[in-house]
Length: 395
Image 1 (spheres, rainbow, N blue to C red):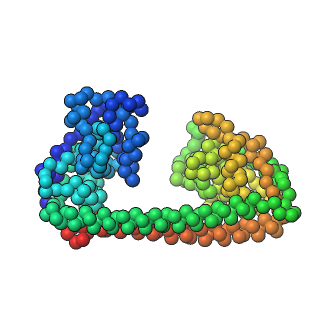
Image 2: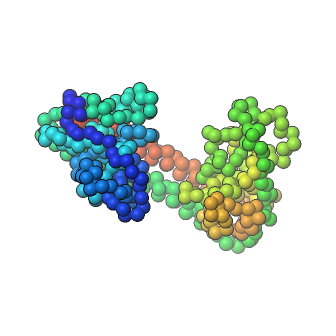
Image 3: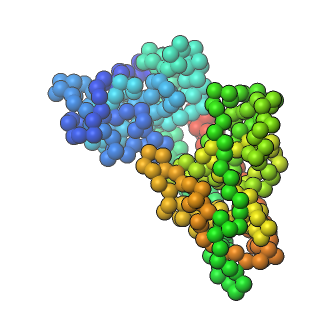
């Protein structure tokens, strides 16, 4: 066991403003280091004097380390970098002993043992970071060079296999979702005999929310939940950041009570990259009141609730929203635009049959997604286990 400071030169990064203009070398920051490495083409530039460039220039074998923020402890092994320097919220570790491989040290910086030490150091820090002194005091297990090479070779092979396995699982999960989406879109794209063209406005009651005053919001569990656009995500509701309205002041808002089976739609940023922001209310979501800039779609006598839910979740409706939403800063849609959406509507019996089939396929898809997510968690756990064993001498 040897302290990192005795094996390497440790220094803080360069302080300067980043620029999108090519005013100097690339300027590597904490935010440029992602799970899969650094996309150098998107890293900004900075001005730096020639003598400072020599001091802060990155080279293959350097390891940079995030010393503050949510990613404290995250590291990156530099390999064949362009002309670049590192920013002040990073610490650079340059190995200066021929008996230590940078690749070996980089692997150690991913072990559970290492992260335990980082978390201990961060917890005991007033600033919530990890400075160069603490980093230099970290004791690192250093086996003979041939053993380091063996560990690096075996772990590289194991991680390549794990990455391939993860890619297979991700593909399977995506395929399951795509199968469901394909069936969903196909079901609503049919123009079979007896299906009539109509509009949402003709088949549903569209209710927009009330402008409840935010200064009267409460956080008391005994008060009534307010359903805002922020609570609506892709196909479901999230109540983690719920606001409430005083239970003793609800009599005049009867019109805005939500019912089980109502479909709700965010009217601001209705569509984002993650998908359309809509949901169907279940018994667990009630009671709640509808807030402004949120629309409720309540079925008329000729429309099945589940059929409506799948219709709003279809590709046709999503494409329609993308086409009609307006506004640059906050894209939004209006009640009139929701009303104007055209679609083909079968009889109630066919609607229920379509909704039943889609519900069954949706259930199976969610089961598959849960299984695949569990497999991904197991693969991540396996990586930690292999790393831990390697640096305990148990590879």
